Amino acid sequence: MLHSRRSVQLLAVIVIATLSIVAPQGAAAAGCAGTSHELQLTNGTVSPGSGTAGSTFTFSVTYQDNGSCAPDSIVVVIEGLGTYALGYVSGNLASGATFRVKLDLPAGRRSYRFEASSGSGKGKRSVVLKNVNPSEVVVSAPPPPPAPPPPPPTSPPPTTPPPTRRPQATPVTTPNQRSESTPVPSASAPPTQGSVVPAVPPDRGDAGGPPGGGDGSLPGEAHSPAGNGSARPLPWLALLVSSLGALFGLIVFAFLSKALADPAPDPTVVMARRRLRPMSQSEPGR
Image (cartoon, rainbow, N blue to C red; front, side):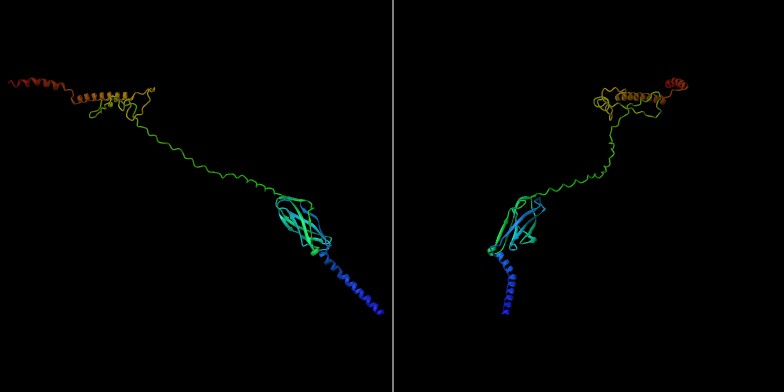
């Protein structure tokens, strides 16, 4: 009898120990699928709440499940951009675990919210967290890049001036001019025998005027403006004087030549000729 009581007590202890080990696992399993399963999201935020395009924004939320069920999905929904999944960071699912994601956002002002779901069957639960802080994320356009500094001024390379050509004198062709005055041969010095003094007749042109033209200038001589007060003789007057001098010289030369050709007769010879002339005239009568 005593032995049987001890056997019953030992069996009761084994059953109680077995139930203490198996019961928690069955309760946990029943918590994710049972009607008593609950979950919630808290502390939804973004950091920083505003920034410039290209900055990194961190979205985070606290997930809590009374059955310690892992979330089937936990995401952040950003208006106008899309849905982004969050990853586990730290903490206990039953007391609260932190999930987050880091994103680079374009410029704009947008609202956001968090959504999560877990469980199965009758314990399937979903929750949305719209009470977030800050309520919007503001992303501004990046400032324009600073303008590059202007390059330092560079001095232009020295330029070598082209060689300067020396001015060349342009030859000026001037007509040959005769001497202003024609030398007049002197009448005091008789020309020697056998020398010839050419006579230069005045060239008066077709109209009988001075040579060279109707203005009294010699051929090739530059015309002087009328009315100048120069004291030099006129060209035609000089030519006339020279012509008269040449003519006078010819006359003197002619007389001298004749005088040299017929010298004065010797008086003795003349008297002899005179004496012989009557005798020659009387001889025919004899």
